[in-house]
Length: 300
Image 1 (tube, rainbow, N blue to C red):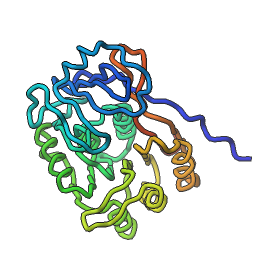
Image 2: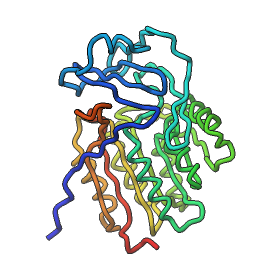
Image 3: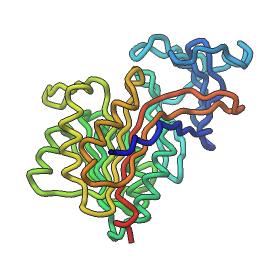
């Protein structure tokens, strides 16, 4: 009889020097990115804020709307400003999708990725970063010595990622920038017989490729994950799937990854990512994840 899956877990971060979740509640979160404080929506913050209204009113910018909307600027905000994470410089901006180009809750995943790369026997491990956006994971992996293939369907996102590369002084790092539909690119890589030591998958719920290809998380992800499984190197490989469709279940994505990688053995880990408030009292859930890596026996 097959043993039951590992229980779902919560992985959280308290932030880092250039990021803090200052407060949350009433459907909002108050955050500091570098020197800029922003107030933006957080539907899952069902509780009441701790900090006084006057503190919230000190925010430089407030986002009105849900996923799409507009920023109301209360104090001067640069067009872009730096936030450093583990030696990489990310340029933050007020985007029309309430994001700033940096997802601090991913820090534990980035650290997990770096630990996997440090264990790899290859002198220059191969990393595939799908739906890679502004490139924090790509640049951290490249700075650690990996050869990175960064894939995104948005030319604007890749341009932003290249600016982050320059700001991080990693212009000579081996990053291959690919403007393409993730499903098409991965299918071609399978046909070419390519392999990667580590694959990162961070898909949106819905999107379009550069040629109008339609991405729908619940119908497109299964075939993509099957192809990703075929791209993983025969030993020491690892895969990380992060999904921001928080209304879904971590169990669903856990079972999908187990299906496509179960024959490889190894260890699986699934659950939620969260950011803990600066004072440490509460944590805001942000996304779901599943991580897989080879058995320890396959490691040096």
